[in-house]
Amino acid sequence: MPTHHDTPPHQGNLFTALRASFPTNLDATAVETDNGLFYTWRDLDRATAKMANLLDSLELPEGSRVAVQVEKSVEALILYLATLRAGFVFLPLNTAYQSAEIEYFIGNAEPAVVVCTEKNFGWVSKIAFKAGTKHVFTLSENVTGSLLDRAANLSDQHEIAIKNSDDLAAILYTSGTTGRSKGAMLTHGNLLSNALVLKDYWGWRTPDQGGDVLIHALPIFHVHGLFVAIHGALINGSKMIWLSKFDPKVVLEKMPEATIFMGVPTLYVRLLAEPGLNQDVVKNMRLFIAGSAPLLIETFNAWQTQTGHTILERYGMSETAMLTSNPYDTKQGERRGGTVGFPLQGVTIRVQDEKNKTLPTGEIGNIEVKGPNVFKGYWRMPEKTAEEFTADGFFKTGDVGKYDERGYITIVGRSKDLIISGGYNVYPAEIEGYLNDLPGIEESAVIGIPHPDFGEVGVALLIAKKGIILDHAKIIANMKANLANFKVPKQCFVIDALPRNTMGKVQKNILREQYAKGL
Ligand code: MLC
Ligand code: AMP
Image (tube, rainbow, N blue to C red; front, side, top):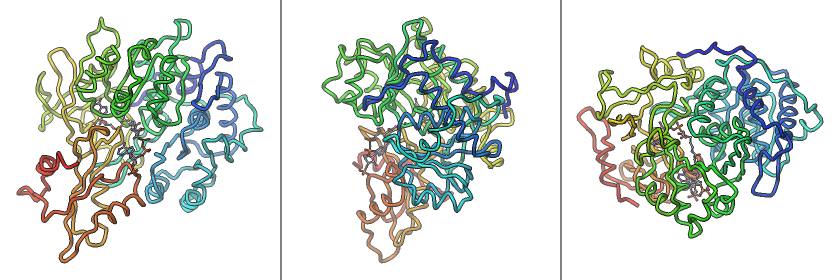
């Protein structure tokens, strides 16, 4: 497992590096929101200090987790930064998660602090107190809640907590092909090394070089919106246009003031459907970045035709942050549609066969990675962690791909049974487990099929218990009431039997072929 003791402890804190990158003019705008609020760099500094002082005042044990399920707001961003600043571990939770999901995460992570919306306080606090959490605060998107009330009167000066670069900064839950979700433990060093590499590779322009302006339209509970976008802007002293949710019309309205946009492929598909997308609207834009799911070549080409810009596609995951990227600088090569580019500086990527032999260029195999960005392991799951690393320290991504003769990597599939829908991961095993427990269902299989908007969506194949007639609408309604909405299969089909191989394993490839045109 990688450890990094290469920086003095006080410089190990990611927040130290972010704070050091604030522009000298602290009165410049750091964040502008879609509801007309402006936050200066001084505001960010003072507000993170107040909130960090609040966390300090709770006298939490070293390494305490701060679990957060709130709507997107600048205050939520401040809470993230304050957690780093105070040296605790940030645990973001998708706002779509419902009570059973939250109960698992809180039970597993045992956070010392939970922050939720005022609307959800009743049920979330119940779960949290039951799990032993001592402090539950509220934070709502309209800048209200006990978190802000409690921080308001505290000092706006705060000494950044001393951290080693291998101390934990965040835990991101990511599901497995079997069993429950695993918390990927990311260190200050993992995140800082990645941010610094991307700052260079994507040619971010500091305020002295004219500055960049990022449109931030992604949720802030996953790697893309939380780390790649936020760290990218902050470590460069660049302003963010902060959109509470993705709305293609609002993005286009803001685009003339911006230079960088980041999105999952669905965001590009939806922008392309807007009549207002043209070369004029993007005239100040320097860079469009896509990732988190495969970008179809049709989307890549249509974007080029309609805007004159070539999307830069990159590849990463929760356990590793960013791994590869197409080049920004044309001197380093063209941006090749259908590929995810080259390994980032410091990242080693190899393509292995089933016997763990490295394959030559052009051959398809399992992608394994090593580098300062690779996580420390799964929270309290040493065996799972050991299983996912090779003896020589490479992390097995579960993605399948190849190198081409010029060193570009293409992801051709996944060895893990995973559906990526609109940039969110859906693990069939979790949904199948849920379905199999419903009355009347003998067994089930959940597969991903192509979808024009979300790239891929889940479809459930159900086998009914003898003599039972299943009601599709009731099953869907039941799932919607209990699971995060994006996990709910878009359609259910009742069939007689699941195709199985001689080992008894369900042959999902056959089902995928059969139902590819299902919707
Ligand atoms: C919403 N819905 C989805 C969905 N998002 N269904 C499948 N997949 C999705 N991703 C459904 C809801 O269930 C609901 O259905 C209906 O769409 C409307 O919900 P909504 O919340 O109003 O949707 P919308 O705002 O349109 O959201 C779509 C989206 C969002 C594309 C903007 O999904 C999104 O922000 N995706 C980005 C995810 C992301 O940031 N991924 C980064 C992971 S990091 P119903 O039936 O209930 O009405 C990572 C590493 C890396 O992977 O490399 O970056
Ligand atoms: P997550 O665990 O949510 O971070 O999702 C990570 C997974 O998203 C990776 O293992 C890949 O399967 C997928 N992914 C991310 N970026 C890309 C990309 N550009 N192309 C294809 N798949 C991607």
